[in-house]
Image 1: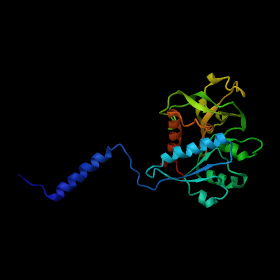
Image 2: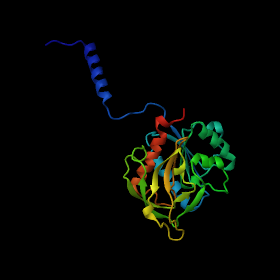
Image 3: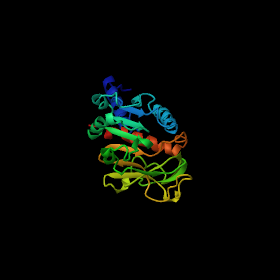
Length: 262
């Protein structure tokens, strides 16, 4: 029987392996993991802190096996502008930058930084008096909310965006307090609304009742690398698999290579 030279066998094996690899479904990243900074306010109201602590546990699980690297802080005040720029993504859990940190946060976002905001991290009214932040969110100030927190029916405004394309068109989200904004972010030409409260919920609330109006809950302002999710009040927000998928999708989309700051 004719014997093939060893070098020929090795070359053939390499060729077959490369051919098989081209069809391999997984992509094992070799580049350094992206870096995320989580920020929360431990002095906030207890229902917000409950969400924040659960969120930190939820996102910690996504870091298993160096899925990504992260730090946690309770204020941006002690973080220099240079240090802030080393993070690919800031996740604000019911927290706003203080007045002392506004300038460096604006610089971070205007220069390609990434932001995920939950619930009160977008609470902005005449008292906070931060016009740039309204521009960043793509909407007017806080307008009203339901009370007490309750589950609600929501609708996906699009099934083509990476954050919503594997979600059902309609689903019920766990109990939370929902903020309405005026003017609505939907009126901005730069905003893409992804998830909205269904008008079939109206009247919404028992003590504080929202009876009508446009009610986006999740959106992105395409002028920035950002996404806002209105959920984040209380200890039920991570009790539903569909909403957890929404949170994971948002995090994955914002941390993807194509979205990293240049």
